[in-house]
Amino acid sequence: MYIKQKEGWIEVITGPMFAGKTEELLRRIKRLEYAKHNIIVFKPTIDTRYEEGHVVSHDNNKTRSINITTAKQILDYVDRNTQVVAIDEVQFLDEEAVEICEYLADKGIRVIVSGLDRNFRGDEFSFMPRLLAIAEYVTKLSAICVKCHTPATRTQRIINGKPAKYDDPVILVGAKDTYEARCRDCHEVPNKPKRYKFLDEK
Ligand SMILES: [Zn+2]
Image (tube, rainbow, N blue to C red; front, side, top):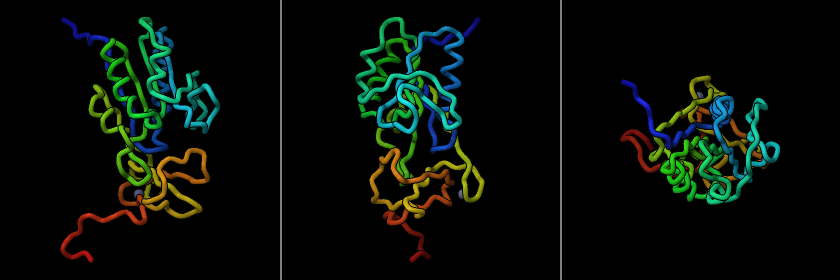
């Protein structure tokens, strides 16, 4: 007896910045390319940190990709011969990405996506919770906290050398902000509303 999974499922690679999400996505893509799988790689155009038409990791590993501005555009490139669809930085697409991923998986396509699970405030990143809920497989990677060197699950945003405030806008790719990996304890979000407190807190 053997166990074989039917084709069509969703894999999500998530975590903070500097955790190696794109690196892990590229590893899975390359493995499937060696096996001659019919694979299409997509990338939202908002992520212009690196060259156009390629998914590139921080250490300059890369593969060719198609730039898209809406999730629905994926359907313009997929046909019955497509076996794998990969999307880098999926959190920058519109929410229809969830329905598109579900549709592709239902059609027998292996869908592999990578994306941030939280924004710089430490809150969930738009539709990512929905995607994580419908995925068959979730790989949650951690980085290393630059302050205390324990596992980091958050992305610290810094503007002009100071921690970004809670009310600063979320998406600013390529702006003057810098980012760091931080753990729960070292992550700083000035002005974040406090909902609860202990008896002995002010
Ligand atoms: Zn820390």
